[in-house]
Amino acid sequence: MMLALIIFAVTLVLVIWQPRDLGIGWIALGGAGVALLTGVVQWADVATVWGIVWDATFTFVALIIISLILDEAGFFSWAALHVARWGAGRGGRLFALIIVLGAVIAAFFANDGAALLLTPIVIAILVRLRFAPGATLAFIIATGFVADTTSLPLIISNLVNIVSANYFGVGFGRYALVMVPVNLVSLAATLGVLWLAFRRQVPAVYRVDALEPPRSVIQDALIFRMAPPLLAVLLLAYFVTAPSGIPVSLVTGTAALLLMAIAGRWWQGGRGAVVSVASALRHAPWQIVLFSVGMYLVVYGLGKAGLTDEGARALVWLSQQGGFVATVGTGFLSAILASVMNNLPSTLVGALAIGQAQVASHVQELMVYANVIGNDLGPKFTPIGSLATLLWLHVLAGKGYGIGWGQYMRIGILITPPVLLLVLAALYGWLSLLGAAA
Image (cartoon, rainbow, N blue to C red; front, side, top):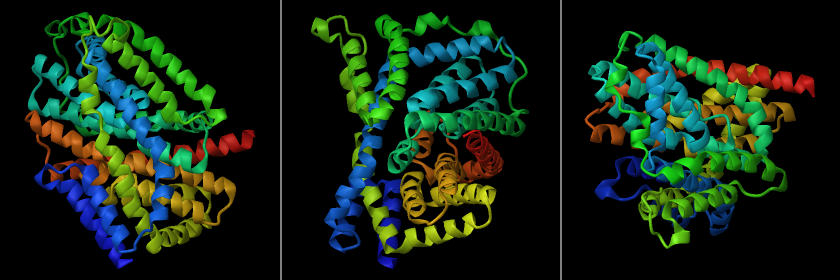
């Protein structure tokens, strides 16, 4: 257990530190290699871990490629400018609308896409509106937090969701039925808590005439016209193909390929292309593929060394206290683990423990979704809770909006617990109603 813990701790520290700009994927693979050489994990475990994470990993890559192409085409800038105009010059309304826009993007393009693509656009708009630094920081924090707290509704909204749904065989339709209403509660709670925290920093009014027309930021009119129907068909395809067991990554990858063909004008030999498909592929998170295998393998070894057994015992005890306590307890345990371990490995630990715990089927379902919620929202306690947060902080620092770890954690500890508690309570209530209706 101690050896497995040391390997995990060193690997995680190096992932955060990234000495000499080593990619997180290579670092995680290095940790996995040490785990293999020391016997913490076996070669057979590689196939087991890959079977758990491959679909989620390639779905995530495909979604980011779609997001990058749409971003280069001006899709998100166009949406943000419309939202700024809908604010009608009222700061409070703009604050709420930006949070809603972040929630919509997180739902369809994953939390990473919402945080990394929307944040620079929001900053650019606020600069044009001449917002004070305090007001700009309030909007930046809101954008970063809502990306995770509202990444619950669909399986594709977060890598955590895909791993959990695949591991427990939860279909796309069932997952959406449970989590869409819960996500609405999360959105409302996030909006309420963020407003209470930052209402004094948000200006009462702003000048709408300082904004350029939304149409002016469209870079590729063809992508702009084709994206909405393509995304609508993609969403429908998730529901239609789920009962057949078709991997989510295959559906998402097909959509990404079609969008790449449109962007690259492949039927014209590339003539007339505006958006660089090569750039989108180059900036896709390929390191996440290596990270998924490496880090999950390191954590799998930690689970084999006893962490999964301890987690299963804790879950059994929680189940004995009743469904509500089991739900809230599982969610907060997952959140705490994610905040110190990173939510991707924490998700696997939680899934393994839930699968091993001998609990009633309805309690297990509560725990499965509570584990997802804890790992989606829990990373907001600390900067190391998710890779998206670390990348988001790096992007902000590059634009001159550095947020220290101490400042981030003060905000995270203030905002996260009440939202997490409300969302877990909503999960328990909604699943109880679904169970009664059945």
